[in-house]
Image 1 (cartoon, rainbow, N blue to C red):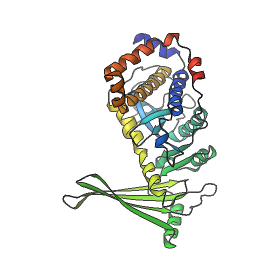
Image 2 (image 1 turned 180 degrees about the vertical axis):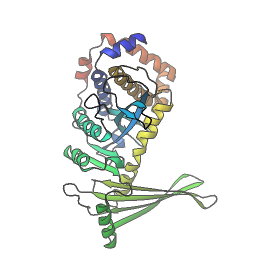
Image 3 (image 1 turned 30 degrees about the horizontal axis):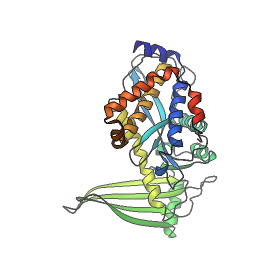
Image 4 (image 1 turned 120 degrees about the vertical axis):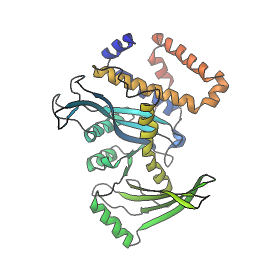
Length: 350
């Protein structure tokens, strides 16, 4: 690993990022994710930020830091991530934007600025990919929404309480004029549990100047069928750029709920599993830290492919152990491999 560390400190993180992008493009070309698209058109992309590492001493130049009331300075490294999510728990990274001190000393970066850069990065990597961006309420800001719409994408954003009172007043007025439609349905995840859903939405745009915004709310009640009592109640409220009607309300509501996948299937799994995202593989070189993180995302991508297709893989190779043996043999041949040859083989569209 000392040799690996020395190599990753010298190469550009963009090189590994281009490999990650190329792998995803091959999967898109193979139409692996097409059946999971929203409205048979948009690929669902979730964006969120998280912290990865903490240091007691400055690990590298431009590392963000915080100073407590006791004058203790803690250095932290955070980033904003874009992941493609699917209903079958597939959650793979498309791009990462790291937060650093903008002036190298004092001025701190933030999730808002990093997200604007991330959106531009996504457009550069996947220029023709139709996306629906699903985000937390932190990103309910006009510059971000304008940025998304300028790229001809759509968005679904969590609408938190005590924000945008002007739009809340418009929702109240639409309710008074019967401009809010409703839909109710049930799901039975098991014979002992019944989930009751009540979804309401604005059929007309709330009109936020340059962008048409539509309101959608869903209430979920979890009921024990055996005892006949309510077990839990959850409320979901979203703002979206997609026009809503009775045929699309349920799908848009379920798509908005996928936002949690980037935390559960993405960050939390990578931090608490054998991937061990929190482990500091390098403590002083930001290039190596970024490259290690990209390698982790590539490994997670391959792992998910193997796990989700383990039945068909087992029939072909006999066991998962044999699959990893084959993959290792392929990696050993990569030194004599010309990427241009494979690039000409696949006519990549995205």
